[in-house]
Length: 164
Image 1 (cartoon, rainbow, N blue to C red):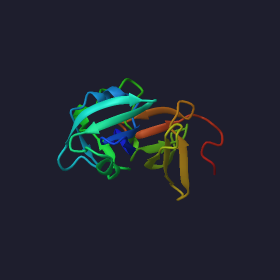
Image 2: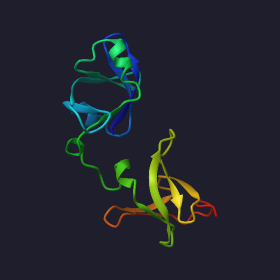
Image 3: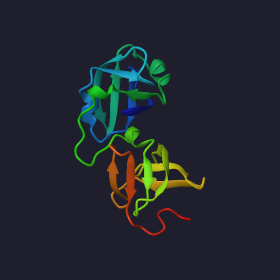
């Protein structure tokens, strides 16, 4: 998911987006997107523009406010091949789900089951080995290393980060 449709904008079918990427250019360069999932027929992108700090999207076939309203809350997805390459130290949030969270000593805490977006840094969430839930901000002050090859996320040594 590259964005979520928040609401209609105006009477001509544009929609306001909440981006799930730091790279608006990924969306502005897209010719087609999938709505909801990477299945079904893609929808042609007619335009992307900024308005008062918010990205607006115009899609083929969405020509009025009523049609745009039906898209409220729908995910906007791109095929992986259409995504811009990431810089070192950047990750797609969906790549973090399923990774094993390790404390600063390399001891397994649990598996990341989901990513919560709170308006600040994304939060890694899941269940610890003892069944208790964990929630860890995915930020430079809490994450020491992410190794997609081994499927692990190593935490920094920060007392209280994972409460017992």
